[in-house]
Image (cartoon, rainbow over all chains, first blue to last red; front, side, top):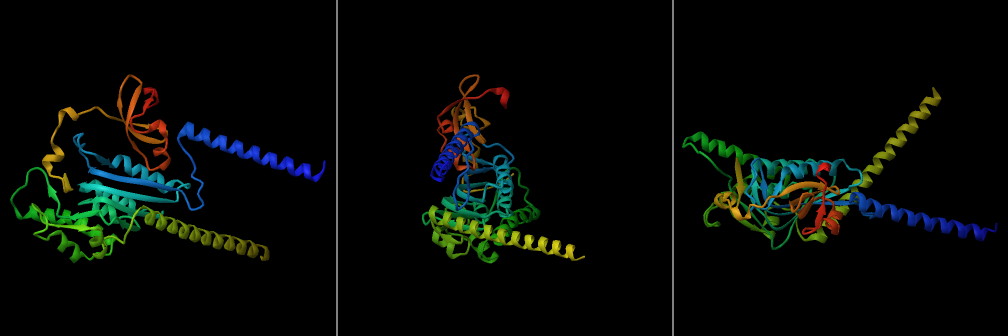
Length: 262
Length: 74
């Protein structure tokens, strides 16, 4: 067989192989709804946090809710799945349950994979810790964030301990936000307790630019800015991993050589 | 329960009976779907809850789509 024929046959095999791969990928998409996004930049998953953050009580159906029992396993899956490189969190929320909100925020902030959040529309109340939980945060210029003190339902006893309890609950939010953003504790509390801004509550409404100026959010931007940043972070992470692997290989080579000498 | 929201309590907890549609959550094609049952084994998709972007491009599970779902698979 001439060399030319061999090349032709190889090329044919390649195209057949490619067609087979595509067919398999289509089959996987049909069967399991999965598909590998073969992007050199990385595979990104997107978590949308919308409406009310639902806590331990199911909210009436007129509320649009984000449920922690849905979100938390998804976050674990993203952290564990080797094919997922980063998480993009999109927020348009009016707040909700403090415990559930902080639970999701802690999950996001403790993830090892690159995370970027974008506040669109609104990221109010407990949406603030959720927005700052990502490693890098963005806000759309037209988006707003309302900082205000927590409230409680049910029986309230008129004793000083009630106030102290409120203050301690408030402290959880304040601590999380100051730990995960560049805003100072004093500034955050000042904005939260400001009077004359909201009609029937104390607090402040921050526009996109105000949130950035106060250090709550890292940057003003939109989807393309956020994704660009996320892909940059993914690239850095990959380089870090590569460097780690190289060191490991070197170490094992050194060990082998030492073994030979002895 | 402590609520931290800009929406007043009365609005969050007001019951609106006509809106009280029965919804279920099922896992289908690796995505959580909020569905309303329309027959014994058929569901109408109301909402897709997934972090995988491909789930949102799949016309089979887009909101409004009707899927056949065998209860035994749950």
